[in-house]
Image (cartoon, rainbow, N blue to C red):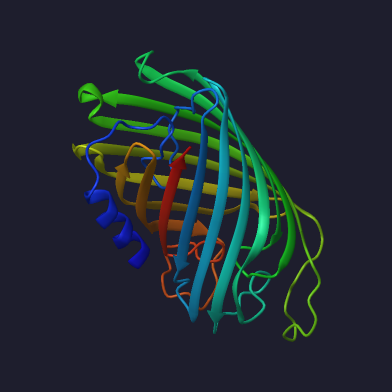
Amino acid sequence: MSLFRSLLLGALALASLPVLADENLFGYVRGAETLPKGARELYQHLTVRTDKGAGHYRALDAKTEFEYGVTDRFSASAELKAQGLNTSGILIDGYMPGDEKYTLKASGVEFGAKVNLMSPAKDDFGLATLFGLSHHWLDPHSGRKKDTTSIEGTLIGQKYFLEGQMTWAGNLGVEATYARRKPIDNLPAGFEWSTDPEVEIELKAGTALAYRFMPNWSVGAEALYETEFETEVGQERWSVFGGPTLHYGGQKWWATLSLMRQVRGGGEKFDAQRYTDLHLIEKTRNEVRLKVGYNF
């Protein structure tokens, strides 16, 4: 939060400047614009996930992304991911085998491609597709070693209202994952920790609305639904998150703060969780995300 306050103070000192293509108005829902040909952008994402309804749980996810405009309608990106974890007093059979604590360390890589089919500024309605291929070697929930390879596709819609002062965006996505946990020594007696390969399919839907209330500044809200189907159990989980967003966009850089809370969830649960109407095995109750982008 101290970093975000510094960003706000710096932003207030800047004059009114034009909006960048593909700047992220939201923390989770993506827009349909792509970078112009030859443009380059560097992104830094920081996400804090807290509260599994039992014990203590705090995770920090970091992502450094470079994106390049190959053409005016096609952008390519590469990402390096890292995570830190501090958890105690939580034991979830098959998922969290005990306490874990470490600072940020590399956890995965991802490569992406975004294709703009219609521009929201030129064609009245924006439409784009986003494809991603990722590999992770750390599990984001337990923090333990787990090889995960995923391929993802997202359909993105975007629409401007009130002569561009209001922006709506919507996403529909599907992700296929192949995963395999690494063995762990000294597990609790009778604890299940499968090292067999898993195949999972995740479906996502998001919607968001932002309003520019003064030059360079927008306030909004976003909602995200996710559900996952796993090899043996069918629908394993589902969750709905929602919350406000605040965005600043300048000539060379932009920043977005998103506060998300899980409002409903279902599927697998564990006995110790306090909130019975949420899914907290693979999700948390709260997520806070800060995104900063720099164009050069």
